[in-house]
Amino acid sequence: MKYRSRTEIVGLILEAANGGGATKTKIMYKAFLSFAQLREYLTMLQDNGLIEYEGGKQTYRTTEKGMRLLHIYNKMYELVPPLTTIAVTEKDVKIERNNSGNDNGNDSDMNFVVNDKNHN
Image (cartoon, rainbow, N blue to C red):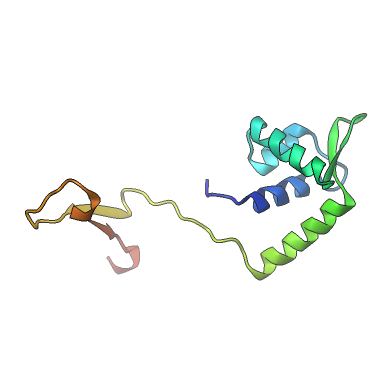
């Protein structure tokens, strides 16, 4: 899984709890978080008035303030999507030792060659 910013994770949580509320389990799965991570984020979101706990239903619901933040986040995402990282496998990169005869055992003696699938 790619690295996600805290802002992106907050957006996923607010989206999951939007419209009728969501249980901790539902939020965990929709935001791809561990239980420990979820607790940390829910505490921060509640402390900032972005999400509220509905005790009778045992669900979390995005507040009006949270909805405003989610709207701003979605507009921002439309203008500038988050940078994506790519997974690199051994098939994508070939590691070669330099033959300079000056092997000091560090990475400066290595060449990393990216295999370009379009030019093979």
